[in-house]
Length: 110
Image (cartoon, rainbow, N blue to C red; front, side, top):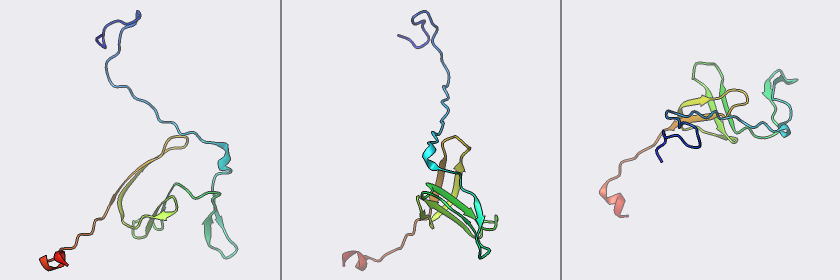
């Protein structure tokens, strides 16, 4: 059956279907995290669980940024793109550096 032929009395639809990804927010995450100031004057954020994704920009100029995935710092990341909104699925894309070392023929035979 052709996609555009009538089926059960309805005309088929051609074109692009767009599905909206919606995040499910369970109530066990507790209260949202907030920036707090400790007695020593330093700022901190307290989490009940390790965040799945955390990006910290210390000065907003890229000179001291940190990127964590499930608590592990991603020190080899560059060109990080994060797409997110409240109550929607968060996606991220990152590139990483690859280190390549040249070797001579003798090193390969050892």
